[in-house]
Length: 194
Ligand SMILES: Cc1cc2nc3c(=O)[nH]c(=O)nc-3n(C[C@H](O)[C@H](O)[C@H](O)COP(=O)(O)O)c2cc1C
Image (cartoon, rainbow, N blue to C red; front, top):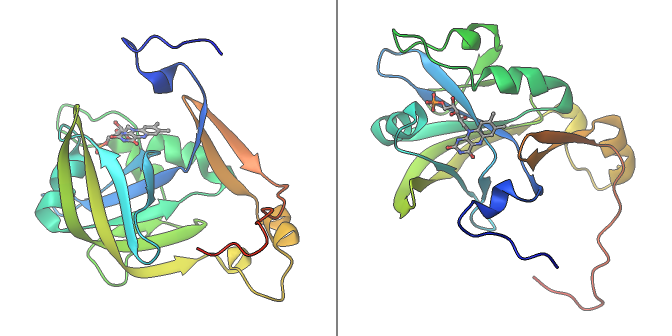
């Protein structure tokens, strides 16, 4: 094993598998912001979802002010749209690249989601935990969710075939991504219980 230099971020010295999400929030002028986040995950067995953000990002201020946010999980062929959502802001604080990102309105909260994504979550803000260096954890409760028709789990559909037909996106931080086509069942121990 090679020891890593902790004066630099560990996460910049290795590749790590992460999800890639696009967080949607409402801006003060009534338009909608979208921003990619890979530090994101479910935070309970049931319906809590959280992501790491920094107070200097509009997403943080928007989520805190509006009390809600959306989460879209792009498909591999939506990687360029995902990148556009991290486009820089102009002097007037607008993100012009967002005009090229197709969206649909949320159903239960005031927000928008990426059109034709793998999965949509609509979240009400539950809590914000500040203080992880310059980062904060923003946690929401899922109040609506929808999955792409070809990506839902059904007991009578073979999982490997379904995923091969509708590949999933993984982000390999920093700066790489993978299209997941081939998967295998996890080898649970006999008697395993959650
Ligand atoms: C692939 C990718 C992953 C990112 N992941 C995160 C993340 O997990 N947390 C974060 O705060 N910013 C992350 N960013 C950076 C923000 O998305 C980016 O700074 C964005 O422009 C912020 O927009 P906002 O100011 O409108 O919130 C990521 C950017 C990219 C391209």
